[in-house]
Structures are given as structure tokens and as C-alpha cells.
Length: 337
Length: 264
Image 1: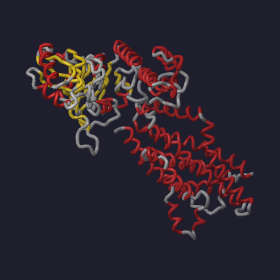
Image 2 (image 1 turned 90 degrees about the vertical axis):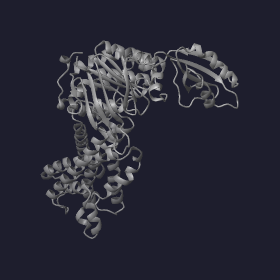
Image 3 (image 1 turned 135 degrees about the horizontal axis):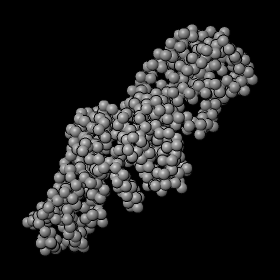
Image 4 (image 1 turned 45 degrees about the vertical axis):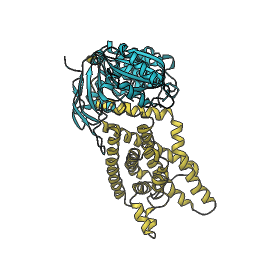
């Protein structure tokens, strides 16, 4: 089967920049697949989407959507694709309903078709009771829903979602995920970008991990985490002694045979599957994530005695399997933010 | 969701739809448009012709000389502002032009659509100026034999205005929007032979040269040639040529600026 999205050796260099924003990226997406581009901010994800959606000129390389070369034939490609951007770009001079009908008009649909389709989509997205108000009144979640509904007005074959749930409340996130899966079930191919591990793991059939414009790994979330097979993660939350430093504690822990690496993560809610690790974690108490060769439980004793020896007070221990985030850390040596 | 359902992409249909969007929005806020267009010329005519006339500072002839200038100014500025202000906003803050940039038509056509809209709105504004002027002044000059020249000049002049708007709207950074008035609009308004016939500047040679670089000068002179042909004016063919040259230059600059903003 021909790929629905194909990117080959894509390079994008913005004028007056030293490094390439996208640096030889290649990947394909099969029809009906949800593909996630995962990477930190500035990794080149949005630029890649920009090229695929005809808004960014590629410096070199090829990109096609639904078999149409987006560089050579952008007009025809636009018929096949739709974009839901990160921030709202709704037309504020129009009502929500008109946002949908005008979008369909741009794509050449008849008035009957646009009105009936708009009504149907507004209902599907739970916006029918708010369809004729001012767009300015919409919350972030509603605007996002309306933008997805708008993107569906011209029945695209490929939908691009740029950071679809950043800034959304948990309920809107779940709603969004559900809608996107439904679209996939209807045969729409979805390409999404995210810097959120959970979203990538939860949503995508396959994930491409991107950093500095390069693809570091690409596979199903399960296969990616299994590259860290045989490894496990031990997470400890400690209040360290007043004279001690986080770096000092980490150095002492890495000295234990079997512990490969230590990483400081956010101390509140830095659990295995729900946490957003931050580069600058709060200092005390601090949560440390230890990457362990073999089973983590076996090293618990040694870890505890090192910590006690340094006068640190242990408040929480968690043993878990590696997540996509750990794959990213393993590949880049950095956490995602 | 099959391809068969999809209408074949038609550039013309997409172009019509985005033009209809802008006309629809204009119609929806027509009173805003009217206020925007009519208020400034209304005041200018009232102060310069009526108030100064009442005090004996200007003659009635001046009122008839000023009105064509004001018509030209209104048409020109309406075209410029129709494009410039929304474009600055749409490209930076609201990003609402994106949906149109992703419509199935060449990106350049979205820029041309802005010009067509500018010409349409500005022509309406210019036509509205005659009754407004007559209302303020009590009478308006009328010369049926100049109607052809008037329409051609207004068409070309509003095109130039729209093209300058396109250049300004895509080249002025959004944080500079406030100084645009001081740096661009004010000089344009006062060096455009609006309030004085160009020929009357003989004694002020340097200023006459300066005004020759403002495309608005050629519009004002052409409108005056059409409406009050007795007032000495630049030859109409020269005016139209000046407008075509200005329109071409600014269309090239504007469309280039637009493409740069639309596709990075």
C-alpha cells in the first residue's frame, strides 16, 4: 500500500540561522494510521508539519500527502489535507457556524452541502447550541473542537494536528483524543506533533522521536519502550540533608553498581505515567529517577543505605517500567523540556 | 469520505469564496465601514470649505476644488486601509488568514483578492463622497463629460492605494502599527495634491517635486481634471500613466511581501 504521507530527506534552513530546523528527516505514514512526532520544543516538528501543509518552503528533500507532491502541486495538496494549529486561528469576524460554511466554500462545496455538513459536525462536536454566537466567547477547548470540525468540512484524507491538546483541561484532552480516534476509524490519516509523552503513547499507532531536526527513532510506542528491555526505573523522592546537593546525591547513587543514570524530575506528581519532568526540578524535596540495569527492586536496599548515609529522608519510592519519556532520555541524554 | 465526493479544485471558485467572505464581513459591519469612510472627509470639507469660507478665508471656488481632492483622498485611503490594517492583524495576532491561505488556490491569488476587495470598497466610498460633499457644501461640481476619466482614474487610484496597503500590511511589523499613521499616512495625505492643485505649486518648486513622487497626486489631479476641468491640472494621460506605474511598483512589492509572510 502506498504511504499516505511521505517525507524524504527533508531539510529546512531558515535564513540567517546557523543550524537546520529540519535536518534530513524521513518517514512515511500509512493510510488510516495515527502518527505522532514527539520531541521537545524547537525540535523541528512544527516546521515539518509546515512543509507538509504547504506553508513552509523546503530547502531540499521531498514531501507528499495523499500521493501529491506538496512542493510541486500545493494547490491540489491543500484539497487533501487539513490542519489544526496550536493556537486558535478561527475567523473572528464570522460565527462558529460561518467558520465551517465559509471553509467549505473555499473548498468549492455547494451551499446545501456546506450547511448540512456544518450542522452535522456542530452536533457531533457538541457545539450546536453555541453555533451562532461570537467566536470570541469560545473557551480554548471549544475553539479547538471547532477547528477540528472545520478541518473536517472538506473531508480531508490527512489531518495534521500541531500540539493538539497543549493548554487544554483534562476533560477536553480526553474528548479530543476520542474524536481523533474516531476520525482514524473513518479512514482519515492523522499526523500529530506533541512534546507530551502520554499523549504520544496514548494516541499514536507509531511514534517518531525528533530532536534537532533529526529522527532518532521510529516505531510503535510499545516497541520503542522495549528497546529499554531489561531496564527498569526506580524513582525516589527525598528530602536531602541541609548541607547536601542534588548533584552530590545523584553522583553517589550512580556509583552504586547497576544504576546507570540518575535524573532529577519535578518533585510534585513526578510519577511514572502522569508526570511532566522539568529540567529544573524544585530542589528540596527532590524526586530522582534512577535507570537500572535489571530489576530495580534488587537495588532498593543499596539505594536506601546510600541515602540514609547522606542524611536524606526518603518519602516515596516507585518502581516501574520505562516509558516513552525514558526512551527519549536514553536517546538524547536530556528530558523533554 | 471517498475521493468521488470531493469537488474538483477550482481556483476561480476558491477565489470567489474568499472574496465573498470579505464582502460578507463588510456587509455585516456596513455602518462601521460608513463611519470609517465618511467621517474624516466630512470634517475636512466642513472645516476647510464651510468654516474657513464663513470666515472669508477661502472662496466658494476653493470648495469646488477641494471636493474632488477629498474624493481622491477618500478612495485612496479607503483602499489602503482596507488591506493594510486587517492584514497586519491577520498575519500576526489573529492568524485568521491561515484558513484562506490553505484554500485550494495559489497563494498569490489571496493577495490579489485583497486588491480586488480594496478596489471594490474604495470605489463605493468614492461614490458616496459626492452626496456627502453636496450635503456639506450645499452643492457639488458635476461634469458628465468627465465621467469616463473619473471612473478610470478612481479604478487605477484605488488599485494603487490597495497595493500600497498590501506592501504596508505585510512589511510593517505589528508592533510598529501605531507609528504607521505618523510615518506613512500623514505624509501621504498632505503631499498628494488633495488640498491644492499641483499647478499652483509653481512658486514652491521643491514641494512640487516632492508631491510628484506621491501616487495620490496623480489621482487627485485626474479626478479634478474630470470634475472641474477649468482648474489647471496635470494632463490626464500623464495622471493615468503615473497611476499605472505606481500601481505596478507597489503591487510587485506588496505581493512579494505577502508571499514572504504566507510561506516561510
